[in-house]
View 1: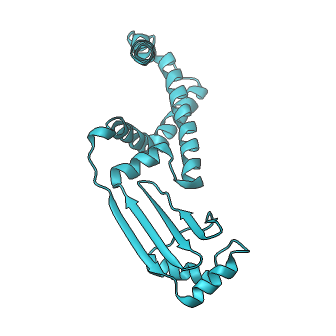
View 2: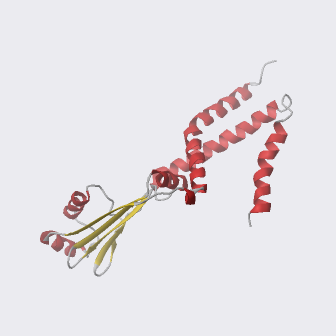
View 3: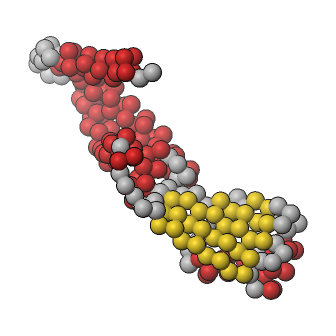
Length: 199
């Protein structure tokens, strides 16, 4: 007896969705464990600091840029040379006496401030390690728009994978009597834990 054509299409959707979400499911499963045991995973943050003063010509440019609330390219280039890295200054906060930039990122944090009068620059960067980096990817913390889109698309693919798997279970349940008891256990175990042990 031949299977209906739509069943073949369903199987194809199932294996394609499983292939697409395989790496993501492994990532989120492993980081789910590391997040659940975050207090037991020791990590020593690496802190980098820098204190320098802007050259006089750049201090003059900084003061004149206060009205426009945008940093000139010359200052941005100088900052990148001092820090040996490219940083985004689009969200800089200007006050009457200081320019402040928060520099959060997955697995770390940072900030930068420049006094407008003296030109004194203070910079601090904290790196909490690879485990913290992947944990932040799991949470979507400070990861940007591209990763946020990835999480949404990945979640939709997981829904397709789960629903097509459920339909295939329905098709195979007559030949496998344990299908529904096992499926029901997968539903009831987390539900009972939530009701009985989480307050």
